[in-house]
Length: 457
Picture 1 (spheres, rainbow, N blue to C red):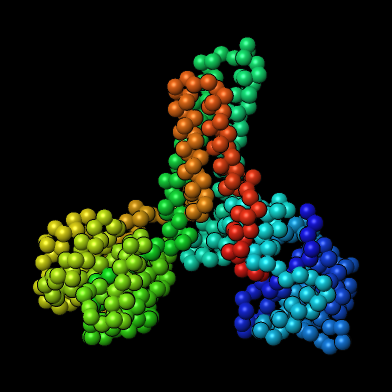
Picture 2 (cartoon, rainbow, N blue to C red):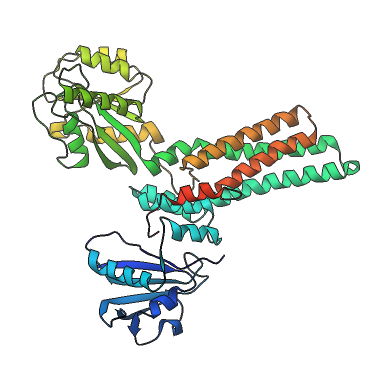
């Protein structure tokens, strides 16, 4: 495909040692060459080499001192000619470099357009392209490992294997329809049943690990709830090792929700400290309480904090009712003080919840909390080396729909329905799996996916 030449700043804006302006397209080398002054013309240098020089504008003024990397197609990120200009970091210097390149004829890239070109030019498929944004947004080492495997094509290879199996099924069906005299019907049904069950097993395997993949990629939405002054904010500050939340003896200090990401055994937790949920006449606190209730509804995990040194109140009992049916860890805080809480009553009210005795002020019980979270969602272990995790919501939805089509095909085979009817469901599953890697997807969907990227990627 032939595209115009685009340019964008590929490093974060702000002060830094260097900043990079990336230029991609057929005219990338010529455009930068018109600005560049060094020992050699960039048009004459070898591919994948870096060169020191200066950029000079049309008036002869020095724009910046630079290192320029020249990479010729097709061995580049976009499979086009790519030039990367390394200039001094800072808002003014990098903006001047970009403006000069745009003035020479390049167009400012749209969000994700560089990766979009890599996809459209066939360097990567759509699932790999989507993994790029997961890689950029990774919040833990394990999330990064997962995204990197997706970028390298681990999921793509698995999907292509499944599609190849279904293609063999469709080919066999076509031969059977075209040459019925050479077919033994019982053999055909047996073969189709074996192949479709094989695909069903593999899709189920991918979906079984999807929840873990989604957590590793997006983080575990974890809400800390409890009535005022039980130690929620202190717990948040302890977990993030920072005084993010205000801690006082005054009930109702936290008026709004506070969000922070932390890493527990490789699992990113989006930790939300909420306003104490209680009946209140304070208008501002009441708004905070309503937001807390909403956060609770959307949570993957709830940390319910109770006071070891106080008897259970009506607010405590109401909270126990609110968390029924959710993933709950009950934290009995302030164990450094005398016990007044009825622990047996807590177990009776929420029998399925894990319970941890803790003194946040003395940092006792924190390790046990981390272990419990890991066990609750990953059975104590998180594997990223061998498993093909699916973490993208679009992929999960397509896999579920493909699974339904495969199950419909299996039922049709078992009921000995006509073979051309079986082919409809098999073809539908094949198409749905193809959408994961970008086969037969709409232009609007492609635009929507890449619009989530930053401009320079």
